[in-house]
Image 1 (cartoon, rainbow over the protein chains, first blue to last red):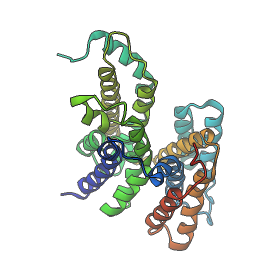
Image 2: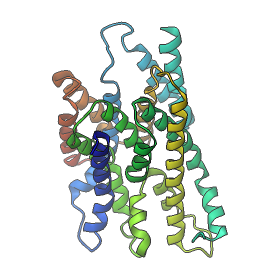
Image 3: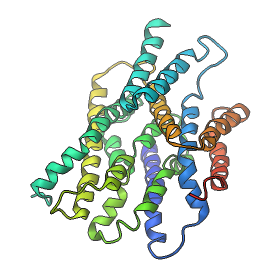
Image 4: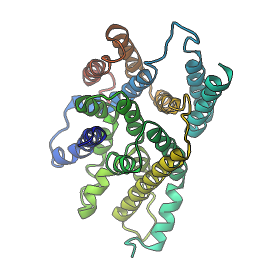
Length: 106
Length: 229
């Protein structure tokens, strides 16, 4: 099996586990463990934070341009989302701004 | 022959059209990125049919290019998609008597379909189960179509677009901001930024992810504030 197929398989298994597990275990009157309820509530926000850090892990903060394009792109994304609540404006606006900075300004 | 009546099809299309718009652009973005890291229609089709999770498929671009192990891919997916566990828990009752539709309904649990199914704006004279199935199926097909279109568009671009993978960062920043605005308690979100940064500084960028995930998961599983709700 190729590398990509193995990774797709692992990701499929994990995703389906999350989707099917509650239906397999909690279809009767069995109570849901508190830790699972907590994970479902708190982990999504933590996981998104972690993915943001993961995306920024290769930024060289100590040399030119000191991660400034990334910070500007992220700032635009956050501010525009708070103002418009439109995810497409934020995602593609932020990306476009970043692309212009790294390709045409720097 | 479609198993859905014309009325159901029309209503479902109307209800899911905002999802189509969102998936159209995000799907194309994903397809272009996947093509840029050297994969094609086959991988795209498998991912969109089997994984069917926008944020995870974007994260997969990073993981595939970093050549991570199957175990890290599995763990990362558990964390990134933990919200599905929450969606599933809340749908156990609703999906109890959905019969043959059930496995597919469960497989197609994603943010957008979940929101529409919770809203449950089922047209009169249509079985609820059929409406749920139609919503799930339409959303899934929009995603498969848009991502594959993205791969095709990506193959027209023969050069590498410098910085295009920032679309991933922007996607996660947007979801993070959205969750931040909806939450009263920001500590779980903050821990998601702070803990990985600490591990990144200590362990370096190639080794920080899995330990950071484990610590974050333990923190979230024992996080008591909000238990009463």
